[in-house]
Amino acid sequence: MKISHTIDKLATERILSPEEFKLLLTCSDPYLHERARMARDAVYGRQIFLRGLIEFTNHCKHNCLYCGLRRENIDLTRYRLSKQQVLECCKIGYDQGFRTFVLQGGEDNYCTDELLTDILRDIKLTYPDCAITLSIGERDRNSYQQLFDAGADRYLLRHETADAAHYSTLHPPDMQLASRKQCLRDLKEIGYQVGCGFMIGSPGQNLDHIVGDFLFIKEIDPSMVGIGPFIPHAATPFSGEKAGELHLVLNALAILRLIKPNLLLPATTALGSLHETGREMGILAGANVVMPNLSPLETRKKYLLYDGKISTEDDPRYCRRFIDQRMHKIGYEVVTSRGDYIEI
Ligand code: SAH
Ligand code: SF4
Image 1 (tube, rainbow, N blue to C red):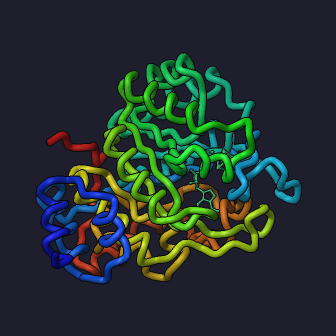
Image 2 (cartoon, protein in one colour; image 1 turned 90 degrees about the vertical axis):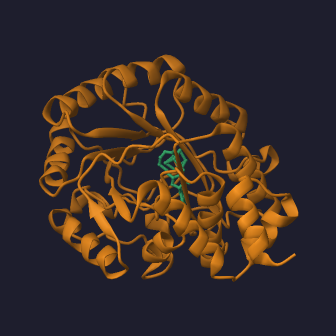
């Protein structure tokens, strides 16, 4: 069967056999990305949603083997932003038209429910027209509930890989795929717009794992999916591993768009770090979200999840103009809106 038929089949049936998924993952037929753009345009048009990323703590109790913030990276100077600093980041973003703030950080025991609910309430009071996304890892259900009640709207928790054996090679034994899945279910039940996701090219990953991730995503039925390339960090056990491949990331984005046309799908910073125009290529493969960094310049270099992360020196006050220009060049418009998930 011709590749274009398989692409059309995915666009209509939203599912393929593992062999067909693998065929599309590795294909270089431009129709895959074209079809993904059509699917996205039918739901969201050619509008790109903005999320302002605020990296508010780089303390982390975990030791994920891939991540530069891992506990055992003792060379890293750790920091936390105060509530005032977080609010200042929001202001810089709000003034440029950001209507979603993503509070991301390591799993930091200092960030109690009390501390976080206080920050959330203040952001919501100051910017009631904005959505808040949290990306702070695994917590218990009661904690997720309190954060939701205090104003968090969305939660990003990548599952990293849907294969338990693969998961256990990326994380120490104190982290389990089953508890991550439970967190995703809890978040959904509470009422968050939930995002899962994974890295392309994480050590030990093969195409079957990626197919497994697609099937898991179908089952979880999230509003958002964050995928980007794995990129090695020198101070991790994976320092000598290869980065994920660009074309695989792009094809995976396109396939996800066809599996679920209304997904909020970011062209990630990691993708922009892998290639100078990676984010543009991501949009052209079906993504519809960009996440410029609103964190203070002083802390950027201390939040290196991987080496070569972009935007460590870009002034957050001008990031909107910068991203507008980039998106405009490829025919897209960045909009001032919360950019909520659309049910179809
Ligand atoms: N601590 C939180 C949020 C920060 S990490 C959490 O773990 O959920 C956010 C994401 O960065 C992770 O989910 C992981 O997929 C990604 N990441 C970490 N190290 C990376 C690397 N070396 N290359 C690419 N992405 C990485
Ligand atoms: Fe911590 Fe998240 Fe990095 Fe794991 S991926 S070490 S939980 S910041």
